Image (cartoon, rainbow, N blue to C red; front, side):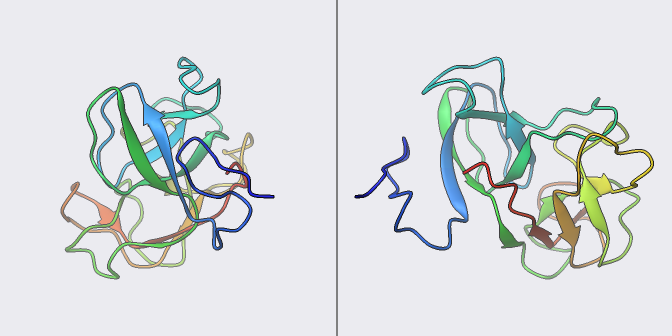
Length: 160
């Protein structure tokens, strides 16, 4: 028996389960890390996303992936929830990162040191509320969406 999610994708027979389309009550920009929006209950609480905020001490446990498109408030956004995101260079479309990500192979977390939508280097002693949400594959550099972005491997958080 198929289980169809709100985005119309068969939740049982669609593998790999790397993309979901979720409601965004506010603007979301391509390349932004996004998280569950607890202030919006469109399609049920937990089925909406927002740009990951800048001030989340200890790491953000609600981050689920990277937006693959830019959408206006009140639209549905396609989010990649696992796997390789980016074009393997620092000059093209990739995930937005903080300036501290200067090399590949760094575990990433959304925290309180970067701007909204950014991920920074995971530090176990500081980020006590969550594990990494991704790994940098390339060094960060200026690109299509920000002053520092890189190709990343998104770690499946298991939410969708």
